[in-house]
Image (cartoon, rainbow, N blue to C red; front, side):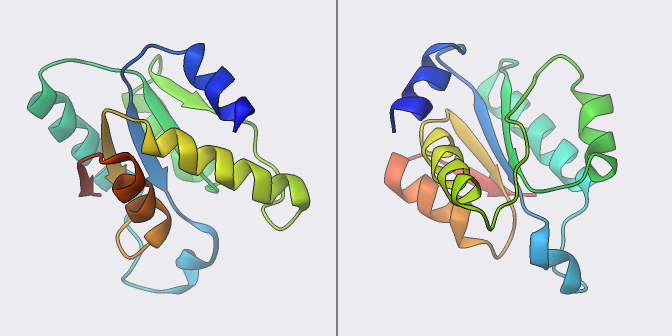
Length: 130
């Protein structure tokens, strides 16, 4: 929890949280939202809140899968270094990501993933799906 607080304190007080799930979701044809859908959803959030905020990106995507986001928002993305999500540190990182998502101003979430939805409920944060 302290690591999540320290990270959040070093950012702007307002930020958009994005949960861009890949992992095993790439095996579920038709379920996966591609990066372009996240770009559209973030642009929609920007318009809805009327300002451009930093974007915290919680993801297990590969660098290649993030190209559209990196190109569309080159100076706005905040990411933590990737780790093996099945390791002890990976589980800790997931909890930190979840806490950071729960503190966002608005969320863009992966459809059918309870990770971001529960962060939204915990933090009382409005969201939309990519």
